[in-house]
Image (cartoon, rainbow, N blue to C red; front, side):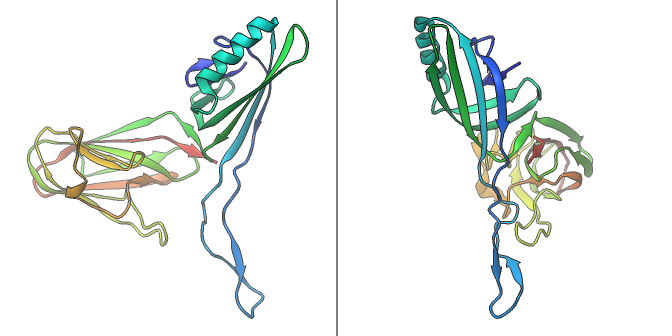
Length: 247
């Protein structure tokens, strides 16, 4: 057992034997304040906002001094101080992302300790799920995971469209009320990508944000989501992609 760090396995690629895994719970940044002159408290903001998640992997490695030095150099060059994608053997297909720090000591001529610590995003991410909606006017999407997650909406117009509106994929972050996403001047056959993960809008790879009317990039809620699509003329072939998120 072990883990993959940016696709390289701690046992197969680095020769490290996993001893323990510690996955911390991200700190909530919510705050409560007392109302003046009252025995009542209110949440003043940051609801659903979390700090980083600490992860620590500890290993042992049997090797002589020179092999130990080689391992230090190899592991450090690959991940120390770097952004890493962590996939645990015991939970394949789910990922953590953060900055890695490597620490190592040598107990004797044979045994050495390795510790890899990661300050990760608060969420655990699943593999990307692609949901084809075709040219239908609406699509019901049942979202896995237990937390709201950014999504990517890809549109391929069947003809020229002056105005295209997506409902159900964006909401006011304070009130939770639904907000529309509208994009203008779509060309036949050119792929439009509205990317809630990277926060960009592109047409065949070129920036198209100036033709977009929206306050928030698209996200999906955990559970059932209904997206509707309204075109001023012809339909688009629609695909929605997302990665499940869990705390």
